[in-house]
Picture 1: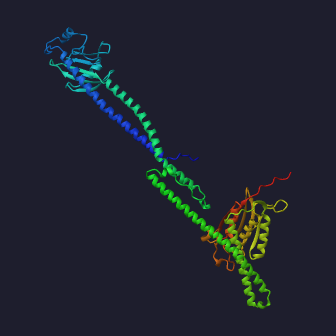
Picture 2: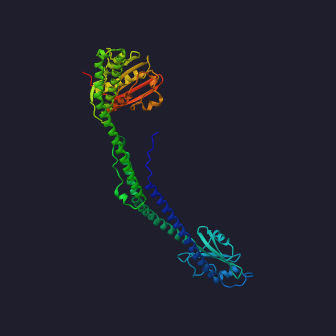
Picture 3: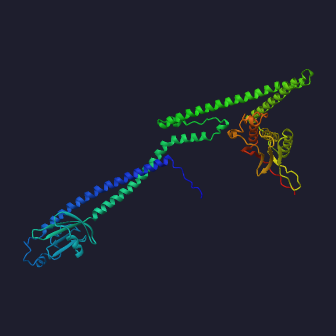
Length: 502
């Protein structure tokens, strides 16, 4: 399942969204809080108008006394059969007037054209259902919509019902809400745009801080790069908390740069000291070895004790000379002096080193892991690098296996091409490397327990030289170890294969 890509939710975006939501909520609240009082005010005005219309209707009804014993229907016809009593010309269009005399009900209204419209039985039933208490009641009249009505009892024992439509209130409030909503949307959009600009301007210094931190994080500090990046002056000049952070960050970067400079200076002094000391030691060591050999030929010291002492001097001077040479080599590699990068066949160096190991370590079982062609000839493995450096890598690894494994150990030295790389591997079935030094086995002056290999001391620089020489040729090293199985691997760049001859 492919991983989904998520655009980072920046602080700027979150603040803009929050501001937009807050402004939207405020605008909606303002619209609602404005619409409610408007509705209440219009309803109050309508109720006042309704009360006045109801009074006019009651006053317009003729005083016929009580209804008992009268032919009321005939009386109504004598008054005016075209409209109900109480529905005067002064009433506004749409004002419903109902006169309920018990057995006779006259109900209707004038439309906008001035024509009288009678109500249906269903509409009359809805109106007469309200109590006759002189209060305003809200109701819905079939086919006419929402109304507010007042029912009043007349002095003759009947009652009049006057009703006004609420359509005007609904249309007014709806229009207000729509207008206010559209205006609010524009206001929210403007506020969001302005807020985004202000937030971008306010957070600009933080962006500069982030860019400075990112530029520092990309520096190759492990290789001695100087920390020259600093927060821009425009951020430092701002009077805000961000400016304080910027000043602190610049001070921190200055301290870091000074610390790295001091470290580099110390390492350079140490390298110079090692190189100078090694150069200075080469001459006296050569003199000691030369005089020891000269004394060995002198009969005056040919006694058993003298011979043993001279042998000791000779072996120790040789070991010290080897240590000096190793230190010089590491010093040169630390200074990144370039090695050769030419194609060469690595097979001869492997064969010769293993042949030497048969002589220097006859108590081990040495094996070669090389590929042969159909004719039994060993195939060449061409490496792009320095032939002398490769030979020293093989020598150091074979010597390491000989020194740090007991007699009878099987050691196999292999060289194979792996695509665009060449793999040199030295595998043994010895006791393995102690767990406490496995992670640092390629560091300098790391030694195994001397009790594991008595009489076979080492300088602790052999594997460090292997790692440094491999890196100098664009390669790398690896190691796996467990009781009964240890393998050292060196991966170098393979030279381009020549096309077969036609």
